[in-house]
Amino acid sequence: MKKLFYIPIVALLFSSCELNELPKAGATEEDIFGSESGLKNYSNSFYRNITSGSDAYKGDAMADYSAVNSLNDFMVGGAYSAEISSGWSWTTLRNINQLIAKCNSPKLSDAIKNNYIGLARFFRAWFYYEKVVRFGDVPWVDHPLAVDETDILKAPRDSREVVMKHIMEDLDFAYANITNTAGDGSTVNKWTALGLKTRIALFEGTFRKYQKLNLATQPEVFFQMAVDAGKILMENGPYGLNISADPKTSQRQLFTSNTPVTKEVMLAVTFSKDLALLNDANWWWTSATYGPRLSLVRPFINSFLNVDGTPYTDRPNFQTEEFYEECQNRDLRLAQLIRTPGYSRNGQPAPPNFASFTYTGYQPIKYTLDDPYYDNGGYNTNAVPLMRYAEILLNYAEAKQELGTFNDADWSKTIGALRSRAGITSGTNTLPTKVDTYLKNTFFPEVNSPVLLEIRRERQVELALEGFRFNDLKRWKLGPLMANLPWTGIYIPALDKLIDIDHNGTPDVVFYDGSKSAPSITVPAGVAKVAIGGKSTNFQTMTSDNHLEWFKAVKRTWDDNNKQYLYPIPSAAIVLNGNLTQNPGWSK
Image 1 (cartoon, rainbow, N blue to C red):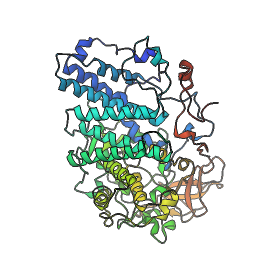
Image 2: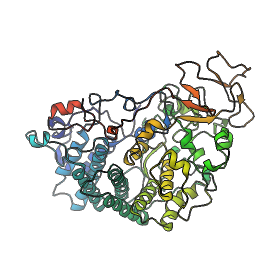
Image 3: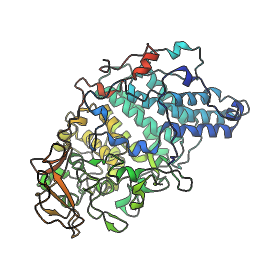
Image 4: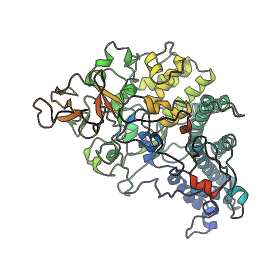
């Protein structure tokens, strides 16, 4: 299987062999850097070097709300170390810097040269942003290195203050000089540069604020950058929220369409059956063995509002509502995220599959196509969004609220607009005034502002499973949620009872005491039989208040000294360059 934005990546060290070489190919430097077609072909390689679609649809496999069949080593005490750390690779940077340094042919106009330099600097900003998020301080290199530049090859890490300054300069240059303004959804344009700036500035501002870094540039500077970039994009860009003829599909359509829905999708990975360029989203999400059987958890599902704009947890009996009842009259995005009553595949009812796929009952469908043909391999052709206008609205709203300048009009055009698309009928035009105590106590105990609470709720609902969650928790300094959020599921009224999950008249599942060999009742063919507890090897249990629970006996860890907000520098890189220091807490 091939992917459009995929190339084999070798985890290389920060060394001269990867920072000072031109890519080996038949073309000469003049062919590549002396013509617009050469620059275009060369810059196209940046897309596949930076990211692949699977980074988005698999990115939340490690998140507080994602119950999976095995823990990432990063979440197992003592299992992760500098010896196995990865991500310290610089090949992509070398290729980007080559274009920036060599795009100087007198045969090309300044506008053409600056356009391609702008594209390169966009991708350099993205590259370095991901390095800073992962490692914190990293070496800043802005040109292809010669083998004798040992002062740089053996240099210590630059502070994130220096690196973030250069990232913002790169994005400003990209916005000013990229000539493409069309929104085709699959190539970078000047609006994408602004969008990335809102993402990075919001991350950096909140990371500095909640981690209390006390660096020279205060968080408010980054919040203002995010607001300014978002404002320009919102007022002048070609994007808006996708509203389909059926409002129940407006969001999911963005993730199941073969071509980017350019009304909203600003950048996506695209695929083609004819070119054998495919992704494996269905296989990953609907396989009992290939993917992690990721199931969403009840505390997260509880954060979806009722359609009247009130919290679901305000319902008097929410804790004992069965699956069918809890899915009624909810935010329309819930049924576009997970299998809910009425969901079907090829015309056949398809309730949550407890036998093979879901541990909690909340089985995701956001990226999957509804034809089971796609479930058994890498056959998907649906485009995978990497950036969409909805994110820009969320970035703008959060940054403006952090500045204390967010008002009713801002709410209406950001959070209110997103909720209106989701079928929510009230509270879309004015700022909230009441704290949702369930949301606060479960996710954001340090937040007292009802406005900021609701902005964060909206972010986790709108961007669910799009690869943002772990970084969001890092920047809000909420890492302990990764270890402590219960992986609970649907309410089970009783064991040894046939349950019609979707109320279509046919029983779907029976849960029974795992200490017994089988249910005590006769179970019709086709009904899933799920053992609850009974053996130390059975990680499917039930809480004292009759909710499914997964992996209770498996300890997820978040270090008390907070070292997990950064990854360790790979030990091999430190051996190669003795001037590199290790991140706090990761030295033996």
